[in-house]
Image (cartoon, rainbow, N blue to C red; front, side):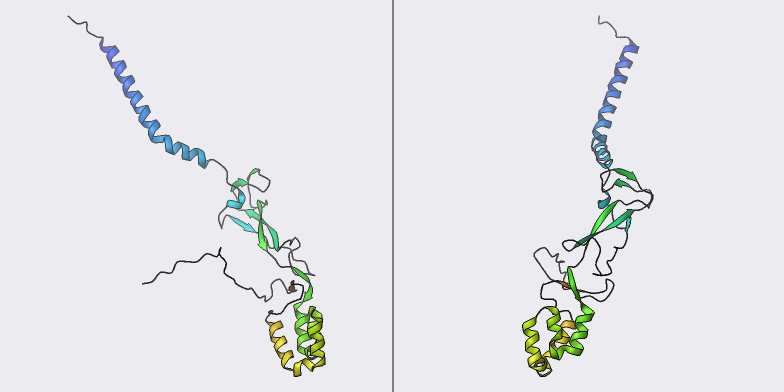
Length: 205
């Protein structure tokens, strides 16, 4: 005759087995979510914030060059302030809770290399003294300036062509620098396509 197992012991073992099964299911289900939550706790860098989560100040312009003060190698930097209640790592790597008044990072912006050649002066010389070659002398083309002087601006035709080219900023200083133009004035921006240019896929009906 087989010995009977106490009812209380069987119930306890059954409850333990059920609890162990539930824990296994919870651990398997929560595994990926727990990993995602752990990864999500890592604080972003302030420069990785999305547009609208920060605002950048305008650059400080040098009155003499009409370019940002810290322009180096065609790049300048402006201070950017994360929005209030944003938590991110600032430019020093410190996790900070921002109130909207602290600098979070410095954003690079393009700038131009200038070397003292004024666009207004070049256009004025080309308009009034172009037939004497003054514009070419000013921009650093003495040979062409002398030739225009000796031929009276190629009988006026060369003066007209140079005035158009200088006005359109096609002809610039001989040293490769850019004209000094008001920072918020009219500037010529040349567009080019390289291997890194993003090309949107054309969809045809």
